[in-house]
Image (cartoon, rainbow, N blue to C red; front, top):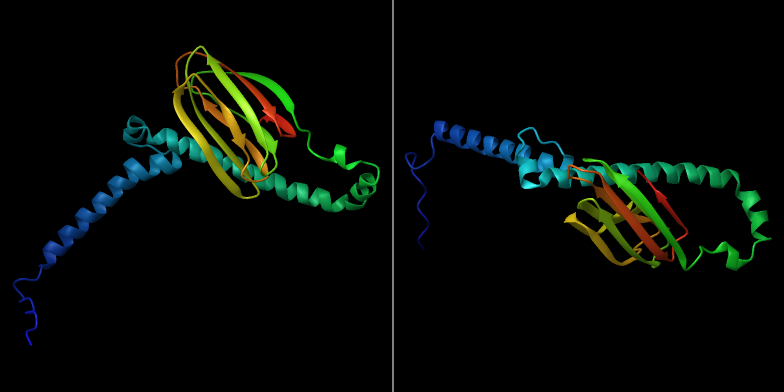
Length: 210
């Protein structure tokens, strides 16, 4: 039986070669971290390459969503404490409220308008139950915007749709879980932009978050 020949000492990499390869690998990893990972994940762009490639904007959206999710989690904890302290009061109130009135209103219709200055972002969300649907359409006046249609609540997050340099959008959003579902817009232009949102469907509340 033939066994593969073992490499000789001369064929093995030398210590300087190993050190050089290690240094090259570390430099490459640091370069990827600074130019790709930090801008796209944390909106940190010390070199400016991330913004040139559009990665910084992605990072800003992710950080915005993370902050919003954290606020929602804090709100859920506070709400849980309040619900516990008022359990008896709510139980008594339920005796006098019919099931029809206790449910979230269906067929609601709203219109909201907001103005974004250059570089400014804003968010409007609908309070929706899992499986609920809402028709929507929005349009910007004065320029285009970047947007992210997403949802969060109860520790869950989802992005339904994103766009860059868009003037308008419409469709139907179906909630994948109980929580807040809506739009984050950012004005990347040099002039003020006014956005008008129209929504209609199965949601209990609509409000501007930012």
